[in-house]
Length: 395
Image (cartoon, rainbow, N blue to C red; front, side, top):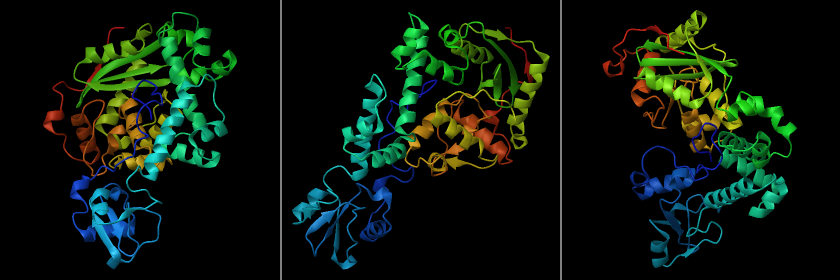
């Protein structure tokens, strides 16, 4: 449930029921045999596509109803509950086919729990949240993690992290006021985690990176201009684009008061290593990375780094690999939040049907990277006119 920001807060929309990215529903279940097969296999894509009625009981149900599967000869299919009622059937009291599905009801409950977490002045105990939405603590914890990809505690922490970043970025008062305003009970508890959260002290973060040195350089590769930036902790940005000046400006916008440093021969060697990762992806990546993000984002990014060159995975695949199979939207948002092109290979994530989805640095670059990794020739439209080689920027 996070929106795409520098550290996405958990206030977005990925609690909504996920429909797998494949053929549209109107192209599925076009005859009764397909509907019966979907019924017997409990195909998740059948939800909302039709209802089935049982002649022996006079009841109609939604696909996925937990009732025992009826005999095929007793089943009739209808496109809607209205049609089934017109034929003389009554709705099942167990699956309630005319209302929200169980998954939709649970998603609505989890959405409400998220609002409670976000508006609470202090973190609410698990039992209090569960009771507020009518779940047992165990069921609430399990379903919350399945829907959001995070535990209720981790969700609350992610919301606090985003709140403190926003408060520091726009703070007119003191750092302490921002810390307490974000819901931290004490300065010490926040400062224990501040370096991992912000990559610098809260005061420096509030001041836009004042006194922080960020070394960067821009090179040319077959995909255009390539910017590499490094903080004291490791590589903090790898960006691709057509305009070197625009890449440098985007870096400056992230840390408006940081000292951007260029003209470093040692750093040029690191830039050349990144260029090599673009041109020969089979070499792999052993760069020291400065990775900042929520716990969920870091789980996604690690899963991306585990995809070998030449292979791809869908957003649903990644969601399953990190143990959050319903958090497909959150996985897509974590990919969009990645600022380390190639090093964290979000270009290897595709739709379920294998087609290419959006890419922070352009879909054509994504296609070109995948072509390179598959051993194909880079398409002319993706090639840059400049020859490769580091170009040192002015600090």
